[in-house]
Length: 365
Image (tube, rainbow, N blue to C red; front, side, top):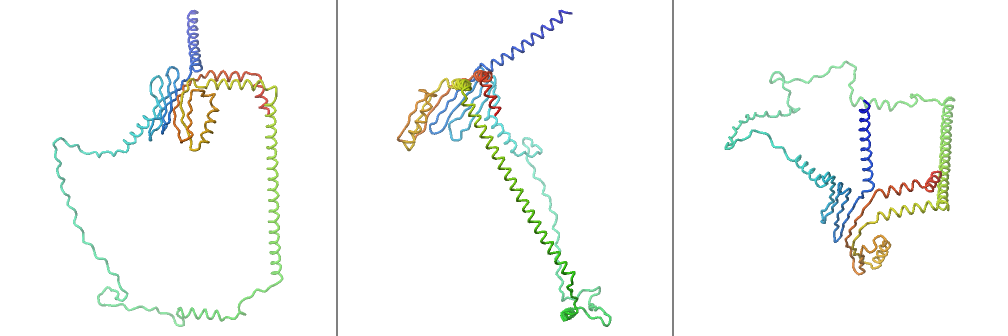
């Protein structure tokens, strides 16, 4: 029983060791296997270029092409273990074919014809006879007598019988009534007498209006006071922010110019230049022909490019033309980048005591 338990523990230990070894192998591959990059480009009237990025003996590769031409477009191909997993041209073509298939009209389903079969003419379906249209009835004129139940008889107009003494209401009667109302004496109309109660009512209304106006003026005064107070508070906050910015600027300048922090800044500078040296291309070749209409502009451009001489040294040939406008050339870059360089620089910066002290002093600002 004991040896079985020991055998199981042995198998578990071997599996754990294998898993740890695989993890360490993957970490070492990521850190120490470089990423290789080749870039080639040229410009002779139109741009043209290509780039290839590979890792782990082309196990993972990315190719980018930009062919020469007016309707040129960038093509990107991604491969993993030699298998193409992405190609923007193939995806676009498949998408366009899919849309074309959708746009094709569907054929109408019908009986299939056998070979040698002749289409028989379809019998003509007779159309139903058109029904005769009825003539539109003529409008009846007011002059024609209305037709009664018996032909030749006419109806006499009926007159309404009114009781005696009742006058017919008409336009003459209405005008007479209005004239009578107009000729009514003014003394007959009721007049409002101004008494002491009416004067008191007017005075009270006038006082109420004055009170409302005074209240509106008081409200305006209160609003103005509130706005002035808000402006004063904003001014104080703005002055406090300016004072805080000034204090932080003074603190930063004190940290930068402190002689105790000089070794830490030298270490940061050394690590930065180490990373830049690693990013410098292993191989750089190129030619550049340039010129402007103004010879002075050509001279300024040559001076600006000369500042980058430590980068390209003698690998890139510059050919300025002070007599004609010109721009053409070609460039080839081969680069190799390791992630371990960046990780090592980051660890050295984090583990340094002087740098950590500077970081703490910046946090306390």
